[in-house]
Image 1 (cartoon, rainbow, N blue to C red):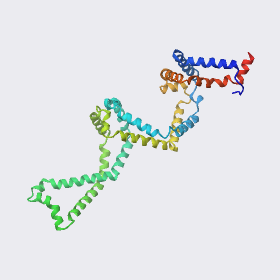
Image 2 (cartoon, rainbow, N blue to C red):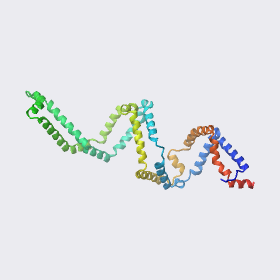
Image 3 (spheres, rainbow, N blue to C red):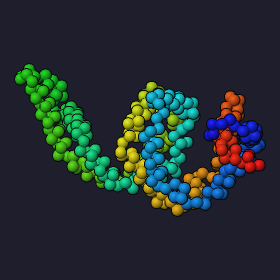
Length: 343
């Protein structure tokens, strides 16, 4: 911008130009501008290949930069937590069932896709069976079964005095030799643990053989039939609003750290590369159409948002200032002065 005062003729043109665009930001004129500009932009640039407008390296750099540097402030976690609580408490959770958000046909598709992951299923079974917690569970089940068997065995109960002996046995053994009952309990537990370790491989084979596609599908369908008409609000019996809010805040805090990792950057770059491998030579308008961004969607979206936004800016006395900033440097420029002097 030139330092000299603006030529009065340029000032008059600037004022007229600002007034013109102010009028274009209202009512029917605004709707026409939205239509004309969207149609013009798509007609002019829509036929260009995507890579002609933006190459893959530029998009990758921009994506990584935005993810790493877009910081919505230290209160973001609190905001996300409050949003999660509002969603949790919304009345629609009580009015909506599981079947409303996951139709039966969609569930069947998901199950079919999951059942295709045979190697993953085998790996999960192997990891589950090999977990010490699983071994402890089986050992405890076997131990309790042995105790119940001894306590409820009909053949033993028919023997004269056997039932009373079983009831008094622990006390009699402890009186005969202090700690004998505990020793027998320990030996019984060791027996259960040894038998469990010996049976784990058999258990793994059993699960691999019997957790076939049909068995899993039938089990899922049985569970689904019991739950499908339950309202979404049913989860409130399992988790509180405060817990949901806390989890959302923890997840947001984790994201702030995770977004700085090289791993996420690599995933973003790989995603962009895959997209460009398919669409680099595709016309922009075809890419937008494949993504569902149609002319009608753009027109409708802007027609819903822009009128109120521009109206509020005008009422706040800001619209003229915004338009003037876009135009004033040209009208105060040497180029504009040269045009006026040549007239």
